[in-house]
Image 1 (cartoon, rainbow, N blue to C red):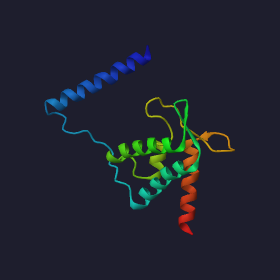
Image 2: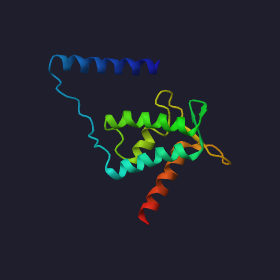
Image 3: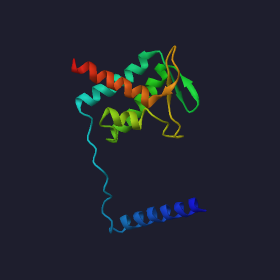
Image 4: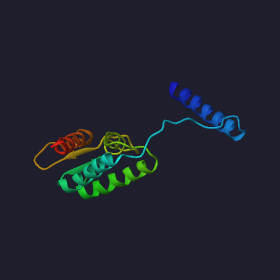
Length: 138
């Protein structure tokens, strides 16, 4: 019952907002500004995606395991979508918004490398990002 009430309130708010927009009483919806990735962030994100493709690891998405190259293509597509909308301007946001869970089902992604147990992809990518940054400081 509560879920229906919350849905009804949300629907009413959206309907009201659209109505106010159409009659000119609501001029804009303020959204937080997000910048394009810096050159460093772009290099890190590209390296994370390429690293998965070259890893030989398997990638679990929505209950099915995929090879690393297929997973790389999938994450590149998700990242391109986010980048066009200025929604992933850091490597951390890429990991959070593209590489951690399915945007369709909400199920977490996992990575399983040869000889190792499967782990959450957010953890796997976080470790790779840390290694990239450590190597860059040398």
